[in-house]
Image 1 (tube, rainbow, N blue to C red):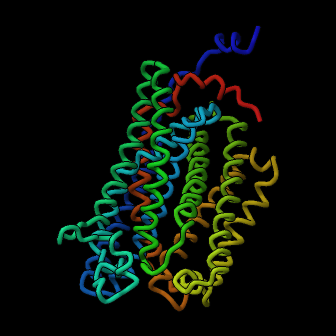
Image 2 (cartoon, rainbow, N blue to C red; image 1 turned 135 degrees about the vertical axis):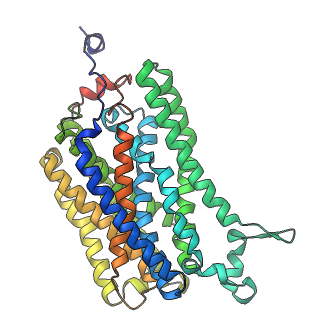
Image 3 (cartoon, one colour; image 1 turned 120 degrees about the horizontal axis):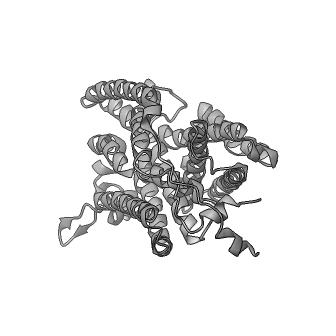
Amino acid sequence: MSDDQHSHHVTLPPAEHFDPKNTTKLVITTSIVGVVALILVAIFGVQALSDHAKGQQFVYSWLFAFLFFFTICAGSLFWVMLHHATDAAWSVVVRRQMENLASLFPYLTVFFIPIIIFRDNLWKWLAIDPATDSFFAAKNWYFNPTIGGIEVPLFWIRCVFYFAFFIFAAHSFRRHSTAQDATGDPKHTLKMRVKSYRNLLPFALCLTFAAIDWVMTLNYKWYSTMWGVYIFAGSALSSMAVLILVVTGLKKQGYLQVVNLEHYHIMGKFLFVFSVFWAYIGFSQYMLIWYANIPEETEYFLIRNTESWNTLSTILVVGHFFIPFLMLLFRFVKRIPNLLCGIAIWVLVMHLLDLYIIVLPNIHYAGFEPHILDLIAPIAIGAPLVVAFLYEIGKRSLFPNRDPRLIESLKLTN
């Protein structure tokens, strides 16, 4: 009997639903921590309204925290689209968790509000007259161009478009995926494949221009043609690390037993690949800017190679690339879930450090100046998102139990 014939006799595992009662203590604890963090942030925010220096520290710390979770959600959406675009079978049993992570975009829009409120403390170009600054004048057409004597808020229009795209795309994939759980109709698989082809380019454009608008313009004189790819590399890597942690956490609670060591092996491979890809893009950007030696470009690295920022940059290079690279080279490491989770946590810490070095030197030029908000802001955003995620995973099966590629995923071998 052929494999295809034999597959028809394989019993598909039933839908598996998450019981929120198992995480009541976690939800309560996380909620309390989140509320306390949000109250502290609100206190700092009120004080910052009347103090420019405090306002800068507040919004830069908040942006750093916001970007951490935004990149994780964006990376999760990328993995969903890549799964369908390549007709991958291995990821069927873990795909639902990617969809759940991507579904957090609506919550992220709420956390963008403080950035809007303190925008003048964040983006210096908002208060610059193009007539007095030649650098800004050359770029003003991109920010808020004047058409027919009327200033068009193009920057804010783009922000709305970014969130609209990410929210709609994530919702669309999840809607078809869960609809297939009910009907088993393979047409949903075909529709999601088509949607992936259509959305990959808009995704790349939205992530790239969001990275430019929100981060590169912190210093409006600086530019890099590789910036969007650099942020994407960190997004894909960090989201895969979170996926490993989520899947392992669910397995330890007795769920997702359909996930085996073969799936961990492939997730470990992707963690390895994107660690290398991040390093490749980071080195290429550094090398090209340093070799060209254009003042507007080298300013970014000059600040980050100064005093204590240089120490953190060195730690980033070693910790974000060399340590994961050396550990993930070995096959057995990728097949030990607890060890792979340890590496995933390390990768997330390094991703957090990466974003910190990207954002905070824009106000602390002379060196690293830690502030309590740098710790509170990630907790204030992360705790509510954890609660929201636990709420989302309880709405539907933990894996697409009627996906036509499920049997192939269950039979996965490396």
